[in-house]
Image (cartoon, rainbow, N blue to C red; front, side):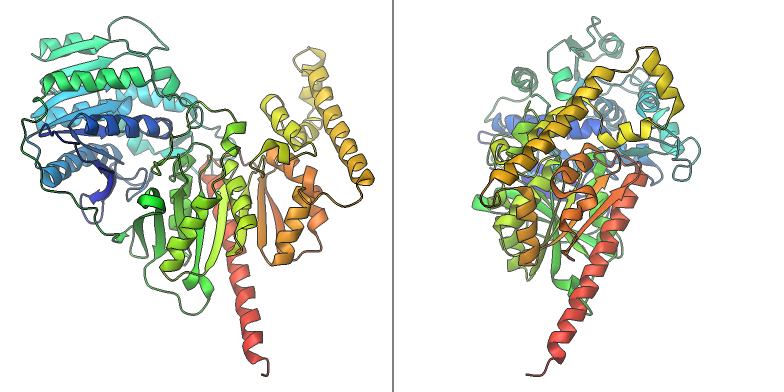
Length: 604
């Protein structure tokens, strides 16, 4: 049976999750999957989904979920009592799984901080059957040290972060949260975490048996240790993460040896997919999970203001937010959730959509261990059409598509293919065509160069820094390589100019021509790039500096964000993008309202 979206916990502090009902024969046992915290939750999203599916196939009822303040759940990083809320979320998840399925006993699973939180929750409950801890953080203090080492530079961030707060990989950890983490210690639990514990080591740091099994054996726990592979592969960027299926099979087998044999439990009452109901994020914002498309295989979350705007076109407008690389609809650093809820508070609806094969749209094998090019090799326009069809059936008629990096390519292709798209917002685009051979004017060379060299604007600014010349004299700068990069750019531009001169007619497949045709059709475009991002080099290669080749089209705009990284991983970056896009939408809606009034005033 397909997974079912569920919401549980207190009304004002709810959690979002997915129930994977057991396939027959049922075991009458439930397993709750506890995610890691922060960016590691993004990296392991596919691992958790595939493990849930395998456990359900083996007869277990499974619930994977987002803690309060993470993922699709209510709340945010800056809320108070984060560590307590995360542990309470596990308890609420256990209660929900028992309520929905009637299972008699519960086991837990966690990776990294997810394992640490699961151990503390289980120790407090006292009735957990089995616990799998994959590369657990022994202490919260050790995890906090890792966060500090990975945190963004504080330079220029002082006005946005309170003293001693840190940002790491796009997530905020307040000083209170860090203090809460410091109270966690897997070796000093008040009571045994479970009857049976399996600790899985890290294959990137082999060091023999972890100290936890011996400690838990002293507490009377049947504890074991294994060094199964898979940790290093899953802790990569989501579009590169690898699923070690053999290790997932080992984990399923370990649970099976401890639980009741399949078929011993009576069949559960048939589970029906709940209707799409709204859940309040705040007094002004609510969210609705939606499934749609062929076989209801596509998934998205509609975020909307409470109440309907009647004085402008916002009431009929909705923005589709498309996947960034292999990230699910939550977005890197929870970016899409933050954007959607902020815009909803300003009156705009959004749909955080998973295209086929990513996140919770499950009709095709999900992206795994793919390179940069393969992100663009699949045509997802049918998925966007299905989402627009779903939204149109709900009464919406003004559609915007928006994406970052590879998501902007999906947005561009959808706008080109579907005339119902009235607006596109493209952030930090590195390629806008699905097939590499379609960009036959040198754009692919820019994408390849972005892996090894920094954007051209970085070098322009560096030339004004005196210390750079000292590094050149010391041989610390790859002058030959950088010079070759700029020669490649010059040669590519020259080749394109010659190609355009010898052509009898303009290349109808060039990006510039497509942008112009979209503008002529009436499709509004906002291009947003980081000042020193490769996306700026790519866009200006095709459209001219600051999009000057599009300057005669009033419905095209290009804006630059200072100090923004590629996926907007700081609060400052996110807030800047949210503000620019919201102001752009406001101006467009005002322009639409003026045009509508003029049409109404026109004599018939």
